[in-house]
Image (cartoon, rainbow over all chains, first blue to last red; front, top):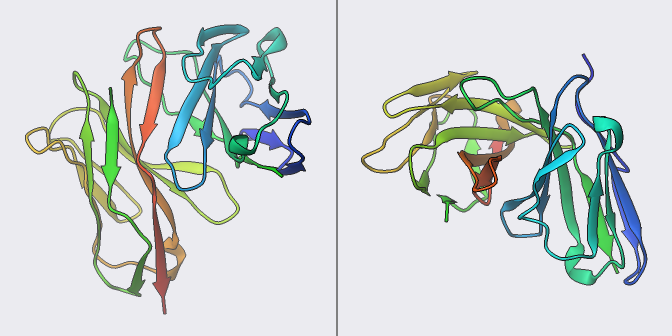
Length: 117
Length: 115
């Protein structure tokens, strides 16, 4: 079974440019999460999709970030325009449909390292 | 809000040494607790978990016990190997106001094991 994949693995852009990150979750996983780790800080939650719907986007830093999950499969995270403080590693994770126990393991991708110059 | 505090690294140990990475948490209710590991060039992998007080999670020789009275979940291994070199993250999961199971992470501890 293929794991969570993310593309690109690295991206270097200039301030003001646009970047789109992609995440392909494990097939059949309803839940998809985006997290971000800024250098020296904790990994922080950004948002959570259940299928194609945004369940919780309370972690999105501002309206320069736009996440989509068309058809409930892969997801994209667009940053427009990028700022210096957006540099960091962006992780995607997925988990199966939440069961009666409420908590399922989240399976992580390798991350996309974004550098804004 | 929820938070996780883990010991700062980096930690360098000789092979077969004993490992402890401290982790404490602040949370409302009774969260589930996790240790994730990130090997070089790879994504985060779940190492072990505990879902209620006094549970002990274990995997690959690593152990951690959910201590509610001290709000701790320290990671231990009796004899580390070079292959254990990685970054270790302590985390908790709790349901948000929007009904989402968000992970809250510590800053991570980089472990290097030398032969």
